[in-house]
Length: 68
Image 1 (cartoon, rainbow, N blue to C red):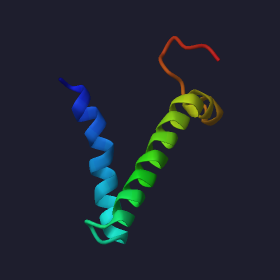
Image 2 (image 1 turned 135 degrees about the vertical axis):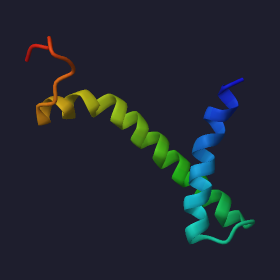
Image 3 (image 1 turned 90 degrees about the horizontal axis):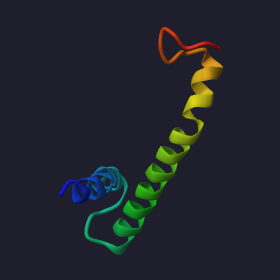
Image 4 (image 1 turned 120 degrees about the vertical axis):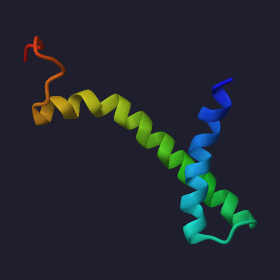
């Protein structure tokens, strides 16, 4: 039963952000909310893909026995 929470959480955050720019209850609000949710999804995926490379680039190690 935790999946609906994971599905609704990005839209709740996107709804708050969209509410800053567009009046709620309009079609434009729904489109902006969907766009913000897609940008959040794309940035999450990019962080998961490129995160380890960026950590290595900054010299951040994963643990005490991690060798370069």
